[in-house]
Image (cartoon, rainbow, N blue to C red; front, side, top):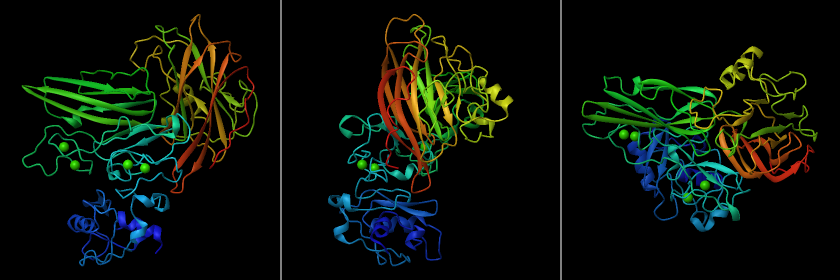
Amino acid sequence: MSRRLGLLCAVLLGLGACSSNNGDSGDGGTCVNATCNQQCIDAGYSGGTCAGGVCQCTGRPDGGDAEVGADADADADADVEEVPEEDAGPEDAEEIEVDPCAPPSCGPVELCGESTHGDGIDNNCDTRVDEDCPCGGIGTTLECMPGDPAACPPGEPCRGGCTRGVETCLEFEAWSDCVGAVASVDERCDGVDNDCDDLFDEGIPGCDSPVICPDTVRAAPMSYVPLDGGSIYPGTFDSWLWEFFCPTTVVTCPAPEDPTARDTQVMIISSGTYRARATIHEGTNTYTCEYAIVAQGQGLRVELNWDTQGSAHGDTDIDLHLHRFGTTTEWCTDDDCYFSNCKGSSYEWGSLDWGLAPTADLAACRDAPHGEGDEWVAHGSCYNPRLDVDVISCTTGVTDSTLFDFCAPENINVDNPPLGEPFRILVNYWSDAGFPGTSHATINIYCGGALRGTLGPQALDYSGGCEGDNWLVADVQFYTGPCGALDCEIVPLGTVQRGTAFGPPWSTFTH
Ligand SMILES: [Ca+2]
Ligand SMILES: [Ca+2]
Ligand SMILES: [Ca+2]
Ligand SMILES: [Ca+2]
């Protein structure tokens, strides 16, 4: 067994790769919590539980070295290799290799992932994420979770009531704190899985919560998300209130259709992690239930916001553009996806054929605002690339995201981005609508549903159609990570030019 697998087995008992079925009673495959827990304690961890049939250890090894041997538990057929003492311990961080495809759990050292720029995981469970990792490019981001990684399986929403936050690459290649995460806490009697082990209110004597709160809900951007109060509290009630909280990346937060109805819905436009809270009054009792709604697109999704959008702020018109891979043609041509050729209502299939297959599932586009969804339905599929909506003017304060006047971000999607081919993102100051001041634009880049970059705010002063200020935002290229997940590399450009020239040559990528 290789040294790298030896270390892996030290932190994750029972992986098939380690030829073991630890935690079971020897009959193969079935993890038993009590045995697993004891094996982890024997290995120097604070404990362990079975998750997905696998024994996962939690808590830092108390001695720094994580030694797990076949003799660690005489009852188990643990076929795991001892980690030589010199291979473990924080001082050897740069030498240690870990199988990047293994479900993470608490270990002795912080790891920076396959990219070496961080992995969003608090590998050493000290509540700091990627604290030893240099980040690569100001404004690039990672979803993150402080504490035991077992709460958030890679590539999936977190379990139970836990949700990831976002860490942002700051100056001097340092990651920010992990902002907005809801971490595991001790279980309470509230209908919520507070400790994020897929069981709610477990181990609390006499607990019988009248509300049962959903685990994380997944949704697509630009879709109606049901707020299903009947499944949370089916009994009679005197009053009901839905509150809806948006991630900081969302400028205008949409409101539920009927906040005082038990069962209602909300139209989500932008990607990100939202929170819904129901407050129920029944007699003298008040019950609450709060849970996360994670809105994730697929492939590449770019979202544009600007601070002079809306009737109260100048009502300026700023546009999102995406340049095709493989060419360096000028902007505002058919190698550029933008309002005049890339909406459902402006697409002329053939002139904007980048060779990318349309997405057959209309759920990806049929709820696009301003009637654009109906256009896609008429086309019969969601074309790639595509611009969801072109917002020319809108009314500040409108929170009904289904209305034409709602101040929505502009968004471009490529559901099936080719690998190893770069796209370039541009923001064009089309019209200031008479507003005399400076506008500031912000771009959020999502890859495979995860926020991977927040760039800007970028000042824009001169509007003039395609010849106005053009912010060259970033080049983005997709690759498949070693564990099969789609990811992207973002190279910020950060320059503003006037005119439609392509700009500097394509960036160099490391993937
Ligand atoms: Ca850490
Ligand atoms: Ca890490
Ligand atoms: Ca629980
Ligand atoms: Ca609970």
